[in-house]
Length: 103
Image 1 (cartoon, rainbow, N blue to C red):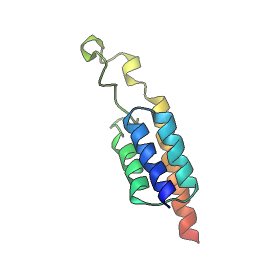
Image 2 (image 1 turned 30 degrees about the horizontal axis):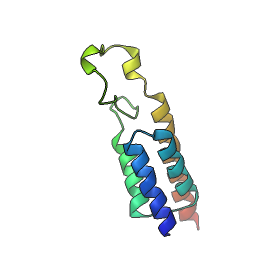
Image 3 (image 1 turned 90 degrees about the horizontal axis):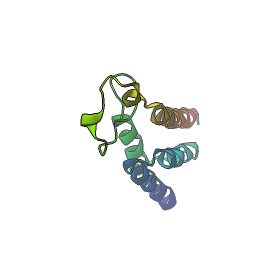
Image 4 (image 1 turned 120 degrees about the vertical axis):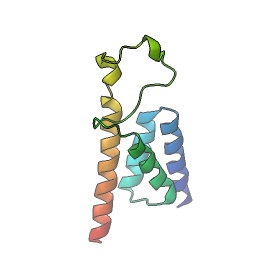
């Protein structure tokens, strides 16, 4: 539906603006409503592009003073909120796709 497509685009915009909670909440809702479109696929693709080689999701804020950060500082490696949100979205999408396949 057009409304779901608009919500998917809003979710993508929220994610790109670092409003992770809102973007992921909208994406989970769309997945649970079994909304499949190019716009919702773009949301999942954007989230998957945030995957780091160490298994976490997300990157440091580009506005941080990276020169002042110590690379081995644990605070620079803390991506748990984003990782949890992304994993929940991907799980919801996977569940929706599995339920769709059973129909």
